[in-house]
Image (cartoon, rainbow, N blue to C red; front, side, top):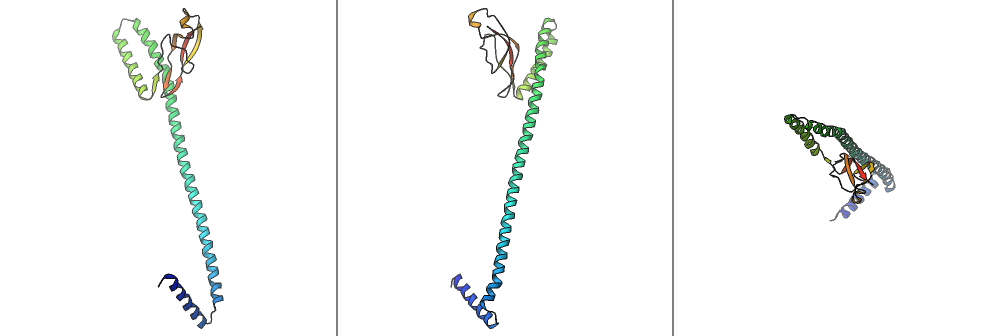
Length: 185
């Protein structure tokens, strides 16, 4: 016997019992209709609450991701700013070593040079690299900033770098300070 047959038999038994008890089928339908409506109402309410929960959960997940990204951006910006602030110290080391080389104290020059090298190594580990340029290179506005132009000694130096005033630096792939140069015109 399948389920439908069993249900049909149960309904006919209930119908017979109800008739014997004085309850007709129209009363029985009236009792079941409000229950069905109430069940349907609760199902709809449950779906609404489920939908609200899923939306709230998705909104919270997006909030967490946004906060995490903002946090990462803040740390990256602070890291970048610290490295930018250390670049003038590298310039001071270069100028200091040039002046110390004029003195006859080799140990002092070597000591300052070792400190400079240690600082450069640490900054390289953090992603800071010097822009590689030399005299005679083509002037490129992506990496260089022309402070002034002077007449070129030869025609082949026109538009080329004649003198490097200050080194430029990359932070990973981004130029954070352009190299200051003098170009030939």
